[in-house]
Image (tube, rainbow, N blue to C red; front, side, top):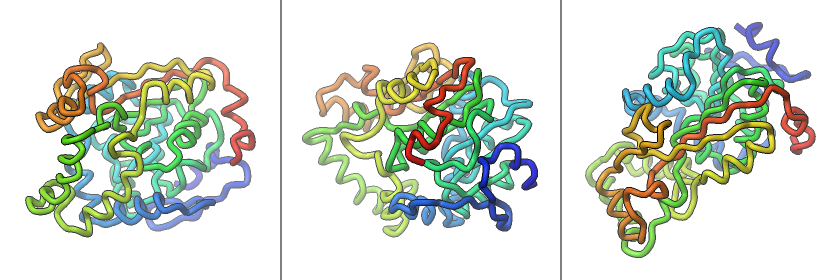
Length: 304
């Protein structure tokens, strides 16, 4: 299994074989890395995430429309967690590499068909320009340095390849104000009492919140964020807002209708609930040009 990765590793990088995954050095162990490693290594929480998140037919049709078939491709999934994307799409890539900081999730991802690697998304152990497709689903907002992680993911894309991100919160849609912000803050107590979703215990809720570094009012991603990072690296960039339960039509400009609680939050914050700026998440589909940019292919120029 290790020999499968050898052609794609940076010079001088050696991976340590663990039970069902490989481990690369993490040069800077941050609070965000520790929080995500802890939360997504808890067997019950990781399994719950795999079972309930990003498993809908809407998700599947949206992603297949964006990426096309994965068959025969070298695919890198950055922030793969327990393997939700591949588990939902069910493609047959030539090689599927999953990177995460949570050992427990990587154990599960390996059972989903990933070659699992524990590594920091800001410091990937792979050489530049090796992957046909790099995917980053629901992961950027879990990282302290979103632009650095996005740039590092882009570095791995080969000329003519594709980078797709999804399910990161659109900043404008989550910028709750006044009464809407009070409601947002009050939700935690309500969720705990009702044992809603991933709030079944105070411990799970507290650790979950620690992982959501950029998922709070006034924070998140923007269309300009993706374009400002990726365009200088030679990517053509398209950004699509959506409200989660919308499929392939997202790529035709249809972002769907959010749940009532989010529509109310946007209305109380002075935004039209049906406006593009009120759509909950952004999907970025970026195609790399035929030449490998020297800016992105030289890690030393980015301070790595």
